[in-house]
Image (cartoon, helix red, strand yellow):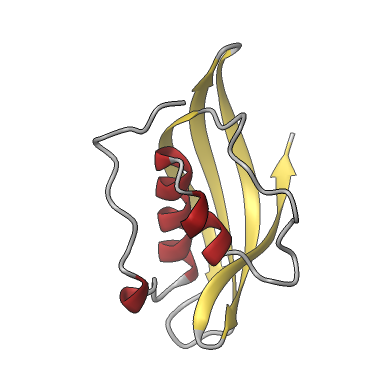
Amino acid sequence: MPDQPDAPAAPDPTEWPATAEALMRSRFEAYRRGDLDWIIATWHPRTLPSDVNLDNNPRWRALQIVDTVAGGEHDEFGIVEFRATYLCDAGHGVMHERSRFERVDGRWVYVDGGIFE
């Protein structure tokens, strides 16, 4: 999908998101913009797939945070549950995921997530 000019720019790496929720929001915007570099940079090295690409990236529309557990400025682990709406060739949909985050070298990173069917 083409870039979306109304999407906010990626955070400055020197201003890494201070909470798991803020990181989740920045990753959503990166998927929206098609910013593979930010997606990879914010993925835990232990769980980063070797074949990350955005070839079938839908047009992401909106993000709703459903729940957070820990993930604050002084935590080491956090969970963010969200719903993200999207458009694709087949129509529209909602991705509902409960994502886990950890700090690596003081920065929040995405570990993995469970998708609700």
